[in-house]
Image 1: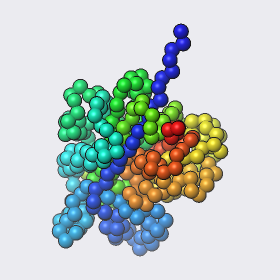
Image 2: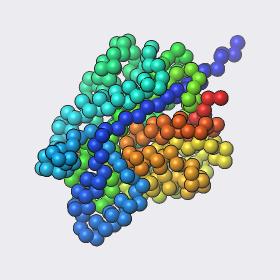
Image 3: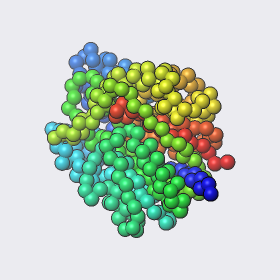
Image 4: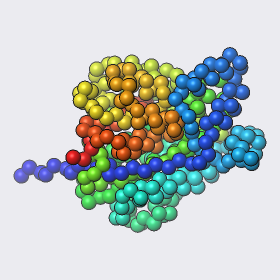
Length: 359
């Protein structure tokens, strides 16, 4: 007897949350003062081209609306140690994640959750934030948990891929997927252009999604992955005594563009789909130059990455949460018959999956 095919796994709904403290302009002023005049002018030009209007932080607003780098702010005097940053993460990450979960509860019933998958790379705590979240929202102690840690910007793919595998093997499963990143906890005292431009991209955000076998939303189709050779040094997190130091090479967009012009890599990075038939692109908004590289290399229309560019403008790059914000925007938009979700991260790797709207 031929076994029955595995059921489809559906991304039924996504909700997002950001803090209320916009730190983008304060960072720009702080960063340009750390550069010599010639580099500061180049920094200003890159700020204008970045396509980012706001980035949000869990760090508190100081006296008289002061930013984290203003007198009395978290970064005002000296760079805090990793312990101080992780103390904030242990409280603020679950709190922001729960705000997203509460928003999800306004969209879809969250009773009977059987599995919790949490992705985060901007902090560590034990018991893990998966356990903290589960306890705070009252999940049963029997709920199975998975914590996807330190994978970076494509961790949302790993989290949704795991949820898909769970649902296809256990059709009755109801999987709560959460991504939460507090990138602004990791400001570094850089005085050169490249690291300051990297930090210009990042903000805080969380997203929550429900994945089940119940038709509705987006069907999560076959996942795929590809890694560029000799590229491991291009995107890197280094854990230091003063937080996590992000290294994001200026070579990344060019390497992505070059790789996507290789038919073999492009086929691997898009799951072998015929690009002419793709009517929905959910691309991780890692930065304007990365989105431009994808658009040019795959010969996409100027509107193809509109959802990604909108998320970048409103929130910046929130690491693993960013792709979920893009998917949330697309769920509220035009139905998609043949979509591709794609994210880039440490490795340098591309990971993604196909998706389509319910009939």
